[in-house]
Every structure is written in structure tokens, then in C-alpha cells.
Length: 145
Image (cartoon, rainbow, N blue to C red; front, top):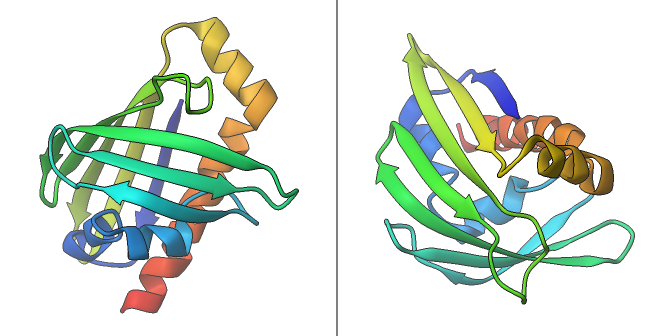
């Protein structure tokens, strides 16, 4: 699953929205969701533990393990893994490409199988959630300028 969006902001600014749990809490997740972080270490091998609180009152436990952090160009992380988080595993590559004064962000999510990707779309609405999350990031980046 791939999401791409162009932001009217410099690459360093867009990248910085990913680097701090206080910033992430302002935009992470689909519309109506909030995020509470319990651990955050933004470096290769570091872990971000967080709960996404759904608008329906359901809590979704999550774990991200950072694989690669190349400031301000690229992030690679693994989502999931373990009995204490949602049963959703995939790897994500996020690239931040300078286009003049703008930034093109591409988020590429790779699932273990096509069937797993289809399940996550059906059960979690991940395709719509990705679009909404990037829209929320766009609004947040505007507020940072």
C-alpha cells in the first residue's frame, strides 16, 4: 500500500513531525483518533510504543521499531510483532523528497502477503486511514510554519 502527498513546506520541517512524540500526537492516525505514547526512542533499533484511541472508544496498542533513520530523507520501521499489540505486521519506508520549497512524502507499506494486506484494509480501514493520516499531517505541518 502506497500513500504519496506533496506538502507546502521544507523537507526538514515535514521530517521533524515524525521525530518527537508530542508532535506525532498532533496528527498521527485517521480522523477522530488520538495517540498516547508510553515509550519513544527515535533511532535505529529504537521503539515507539503507543496507543491509538479510536473515536468509538476502542484502544489499539501499537509498537513501531525503527530500522533506519536518515535525517531528513528517509525512515524505515517495522510495525507490530508481539502478543501485546494489534495483530498487524508490516514494514514501512517513508521518503521525503525536496521539490523546490515543497516536500513529497511517500509512505510505502509492505505486508507479509496480499491476503494480510486485504485483511488489514477490511478490518482496520488501513487504506482510508493512510489517506486521512497524511491529510492530518498536512494540516499539522501548516500549523508549524
